[in-house]
Length: 338
Ligand code: AMP
Ligand code: MG
Image (tube, rainbow, N blue to C red; front, side):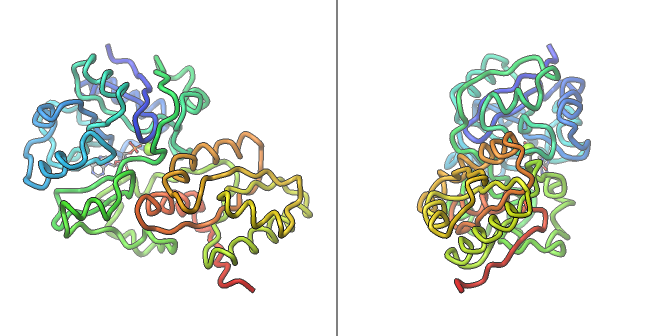
């Protein structure tokens, strides 16, 4: 009936509307404060529904769907008539995915509709991985939140554009580039997904994926991202934390268990708020806690967040992509241990 329902997926919580109802979809943009030119992902629950959303299913699309659906992969294909133009931001391509979360599946099936859903956060804020994150951002603006407990993966889906040749990863996410390349070996990734995100690398990005320009995943506090060798990062984070605390600022650390143990020995003032981001030896644990730790530090009213870097293999690429964007250029090269 044109309402907005937030629901859990295996990546993050989504804010859903009937993808065939332009008014309903327009309300998503209003509720989130989302820029009109940033298109949405259409969620389906059966492979047969893909035909109702896209105009042409390529061989790559079939192979990827078989390999990764249901799961955290979004593919972009030419859009079919009947999908509201608000979904595609007026463009002729559509992003589509089949989520694996049982509640998301059940909701889409019960609705009997393709569901357009971006992440259920105020635009620019860290994505919601729990129902109370959605509540904090959107209570009073949407009809319903379905609470399915914490989202498992914690970062959004991988977005792969199949309308460009070779296929282009527009956003790293829950399916790693290594996994993707087993099915589409020539898939390309924009160079900016390392830690040194240079503006120049974006030339091709914004036109193809408006989200690259708009998404910031930002906590309210200023996030500083430390790079370089890990031991050097730990030393630099500890000494910066001491300096900021001495200057009277409220500091938060978004750091791994390994860094917490090591930095503790280096001496962290007890006024510093420490949020454990997971383990460096299991980057899936960092992915699943990343947005929650950002929101937790915000709730502690810290002014500055100091964060460490991770390896970009596997889901680490998605983690680093979100951290680099959150830092918005505030990168500190800690170099080698001194
Ligand atoms: P969200 O659901 O909030 O995680 O955002 C969806 C992401 O998919 C954004 O980065 C969008 O820019 C991207 N996206 C959705 N549809 C398209 C499309 N037709 N072409 C390119 N990117 C898209
Ligand atoms: Mg989003």
